[in-house]
Length: 110
Image (cartoon, rainbow, N blue to C red; front, side, top):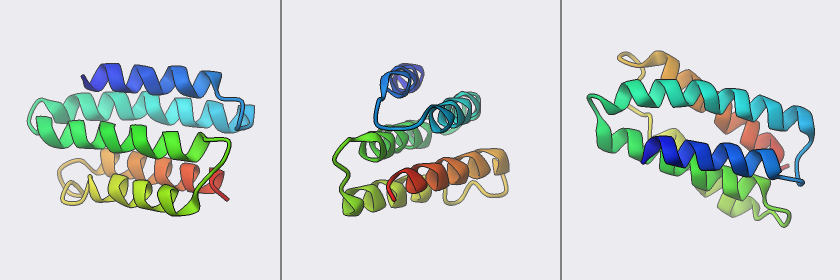
């Protein structure tokens, strides 16, 4: 399910007309890194990995919509950020990549 969610995100981003190409490429690169990190996490923390993938999907959806709702973007990004709380020591790369995704998506919502 996690792989499917991230593949859907990659396809959605690739086809998004509401963001610039450079932003698209940055997000696709971040998603590629996230895929590896979440895959590793899913071996020991399956439900948390699914939450991270799900919040990434929702956050991306809200940030790349043509008609953005800043409140919905903030809620989705807060959920995404919260989904990695507690993994700072055991999975620092995962936390870093999620924080970078949050920042990038937040900048799209401006």
